[in-house]
Amino acid sequence: MVEREENGDFTRSEQIRQELLDYLKDVDFGTPKYQACCDYLDYEYQMNSWRREVKVAADSSGSDPEERLFYESQMRIREIHIALLEREIEKNRTRILGYSDAYAHIWLTFDDLGDIVYEETKAIYPNEENEVNIHAFRKWGEILDDFKTRLIERESKE
Image 1 (cartoon, rainbow, N blue to C red):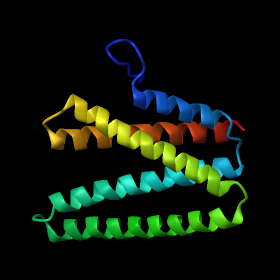
Image 2: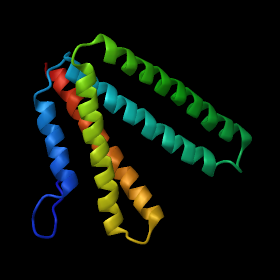
Image 3: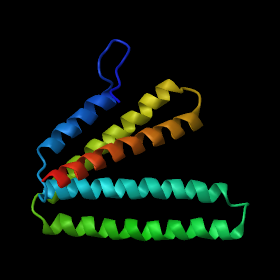
């Protein structure tokens, strides 16, 4: 899934993605960097799932009341997971030496990557905001899944 510009150079999102992959190569299982990476990816996964559930709940608002209640319940459960994870991250920042810096690095780099993915998608669909949102959200989810899978694979090998 390597993306290149028309001139053959890597896109900016692919360059940042590679920087993150290089960073992950130096992250050993059980270290503060590893924990920060796992926590960040889990947080983003939970947030993406919540956003998807909000969309489904909004789309089903005029349908069966039981279905709507189910989606609203799923959203509340997800919100609890997110709140617990946020609390755990805050505790880890003060308890684990090196965690805070590692988390900040991962968060800022992924934040930049998310912005660039959005801008690159916007360049593909310049006048179609809905398409931009759909495709950028999908690509962001794929990127997060890829990184989470790579961390899990590393964990199972060690």
